[in-house]
Image (cartoon, helix red, strand yellow):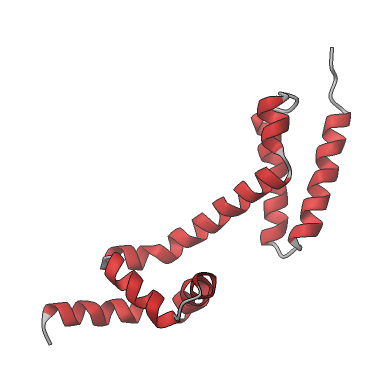
Length: 130
């Protein structure tokens, strides 16, 4: 077996591990409308061995970042923080992070979002405008 074949075998072992399949390959292949094999081949072509080994941990960070960005938009925090300047960045982040933590802990997105909106409304009601 030559070096290229060995490298491909090692890459396949990483990509075909249970967590890779469960967290990356199967969901992404559904999103792209391709087979798992097509996506495996694509990642094997695009990524080197160290990138493959590090990607799963990076995916967890990316998932949280995507969740926070989605909450930012769904709570319309840029509007209250940047445009109207009614809330500080810290106040917006506090609400967003609290809702994200609830979702990560198992609360449904819609329920946690509704709770976050209620908290946001209460915060806005209690602003002292001089």
